Image (tube, rainbow, N blue to C red; front, top):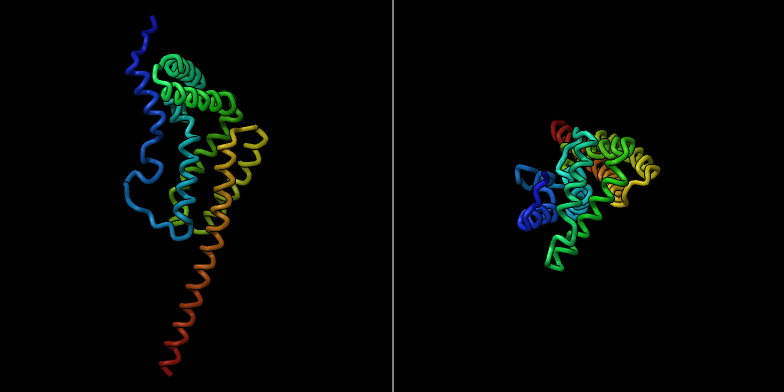
Length: 206
């Protein structure tokens, strides 16, 4: 026999989802990252899109979870977060918004194995996002991530995946294009400065 969740349980669930993921996406260590080659504001914009498109986190599952569990979670979330379960109009509006995200994530991504496979590839590329604008992602690796994202974007668009995911992919490509240009210019300037310094030392030795 299915138990009826208490109002407190429903409220806690809604508040947890509205709060979004914990600081895991922005660096679990809590250290400040120096993004010399990517504006911090644009990187924050990208991570906000990731939070909005964290469908596995929304459903409380992982990329390895079977489709049957995702369906079960969707039914449970729909039951728990129905707007009629809340008395406060503000919470009713929030529940409606969250349910819309749940339905979009399931119908357009997680229900279909092909679109879920594309989404899983996006999740793998997201592992590089914290490195954007840092020396830990040299231009050769950034170019590979950009090319992968460009290819993935075409497949996402063909699969009619949510606009927030498409916007995320486009922002990644834009950021990495600018990152690669800035990084390569930085390397050229450093090489030129080293060559000039070397020539100066050689001149002084004569």
